[in-house]
View (cartoon, rainbow, N blue to C red):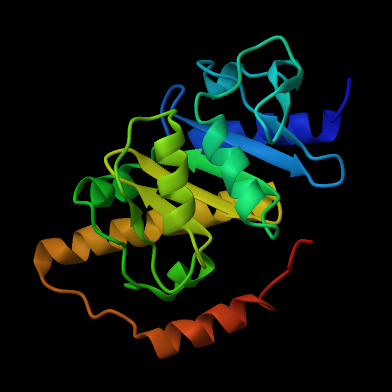
Length: 215
């Protein structure tokens, strides 16, 4: 079977989305991009993450053609392919319907730098304009809002993140959700103090060398 390692990683991190409470049922999708061949390995449509197997994954090119796989690809495959086309630094994309980030997205507001961990995504997390799920319009909106960022809220929908590997993309989703929860809760009792752009620029620089960086 081609791309066995990538398929197994998609199963693993799909299960982690459920384990960490970052999505429910079939909400969300994950992919890994092979930039040498121009192929994307993506989760299928409509299968719960805890029931996925490596064989269920779909291999596609960035034009949306299926190279291998018997299942239908995720309905959001265009969002993944357009991100890979636009961002040469991104090799994995994770989309989830997290609770607090989705709450903020329903206000159609950006998530400001209420906590320095937002720097994993950028100086803040913008909210892309609303469009029906699975459409080219939504994909274009996400790509536009994700300029100079590693994550974006999808209005009335959820969150999507991209990075150089699936481990980092997942971590961005997890940390942005944590920051969204902090923002929601602080807004319930007052007005949080937001870190300024200068501080966030420092934080972004620190995260380039922080911890055990995965290539």
